[in-house]
Image 1 (tube, rainbow, N blue to C red):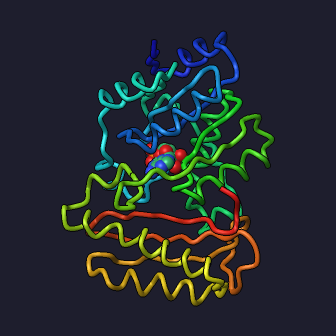
Image 2 (cartoon, helix red, strand yellow; image 1 turned 180 degrees about the vertical axis):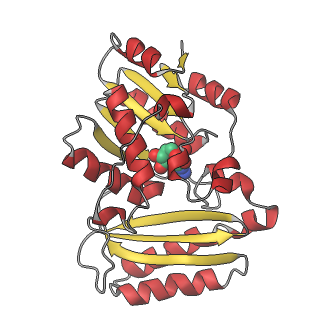
Length: 275
Ligand code: AMP
């Protein structure tokens, strides 16, 4: 039986006597197969699975992006029930940020550009404190987010272990994202260019290419072949520090952001690490 809770108080009370360990899957809803794979991983590992559904206003750069973020609580609750989730927390904004809430968690260099991840770090710290889970599961699709949350959990000695999970993709390679719903059919057809560029860079890496500039150039060239894609950045960075690399000598993260119409998508590929 999946319990659906709304207040901090209900959540705390429900968690007081659940079987441990507890696995937490934080989400912003509009749940898809990527979220569901996190729930499945949590369920396989932990005795109790908690999913949170909260569109966090603090992590949106503009108000229109926040207000148009897709929402369908009924379908989300059905997905959680189908995955055998034990507890779903669906709070109102005031429940996460009660009147007077005046704390911001700000992680350093790995969260660059400054301030960008404050909203994420603040809400995840709050969720970690409220749930007190042994494990929390995050998608590798948001690679920088995983690194920021790991850094935060380590630095603040939070007792929740951060567990990254592989990116789930459509058959044509597009990473599943709640934002894909905003793509027009033409933009949807164009969007797999990101994965094609990342795969080409990975193939060049596998063939021995180690120059950051060459790999970035290769990805830029491929994205440039798609007129509907507006590249925001490509990056070939150290997988631990996220510093841009001249030469790859260890684990590296290839990543990019591109805008299709009004929709900004991100994707990445890790190289030089075991699966
Ligand atoms: P969101 O609802 O977009 O905040 O995502 C909630 C969690 O699901 C985050 O940890 C995401 O990284 C993860 N996630 C989103 N999309 C995918 C995907 N395609 N594959 C795996 N995990 C994902």
